[in-house]
Amino acid sequence: MHPGIDNKNAVLNKTKFLILAGVLLSLIGCTRVIQKVSQVGVSTGAEIFAGPTIHMMVDIIMDTDNIRLAREGIGGNMVIVTALAELHPNDLEIQSKAAYLHCCYGMLVENDDPRFASQLYHIARDCGKRALRTNKKFRDGMDSGKRISELVQYLDDDYVEALMWTASAKMLYLLQNRNDHQAQLEIPESLDMVGRAMEMDPDYLFGACQMFIGVYYALIPEFMGVGSGPENSAKMFQEARDVTDGKNLMVDLFEARFLSVTIGDKPRFEELMDHIFKTDPKALEGGAMLNVFAQEQARYWLDKKKELF
Image (cartoon, rainbow, N blue to C red; front, side, top):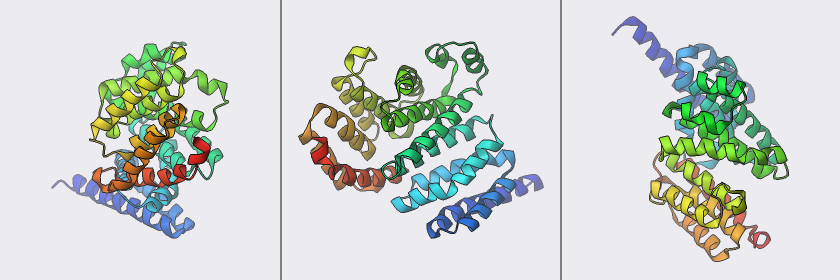
């Protein structure tokens, strides 16, 4: 093998080790060691390895069925994500993954610290915008004042992740700050972004696009004219469910939390929660973390059932 390739493989293997070490050390709470691992990871990764580094981090965390490992692993390694995003502001993959991870971390902490979660969603939105602006036609259009709905056509399937998590960051922020009128005004462009992502990859992240549209439709009154309302919301949740044959429990959680609560359907709420608890999280290959998180959240919202209905 060519010596240059040997060297790249050695660095890549070291990067894998550093990511795993960072995740595991975060469970111990050894902050100084975590920071050192992160610094070494960034300094040895070089530009060619920055993308694979953050991609492997996502795969490792997404595949765990230990919610503490997921929560503290992401939290402990956000220094890596932030550093990579700052070092590579014009890298589509890095900015897209940074948006995704900040959204994930926000969801993991929002019940305990909604203000911090809102800050994470703002960061996710900014990373997502930087990712989208790596497309010249999109960037030029934004700078000239064109609407998102006019510009998403210029984005190909390389931008699915950026579209999805830029829009999701906006939605997640709005759910925590429902009186923010500016955030409300951005709903249509968020739907345009997710719609374009779903058009290019309807199976993205176990039906995430359909699921988030289902949430929007559940919360937005029909008279706003964006295809919303309970009937269309239920349809989108079912389309999301069909992607994994019901193995993605986040779909059940979001339908229960938003659609069932909005229309006051307590029996459906309880039915969905029951299905969440009876399903093995590992049934969703490559996405066990989503399912254990759904189960944790189901317990949280069941405790609030009297307040919801």
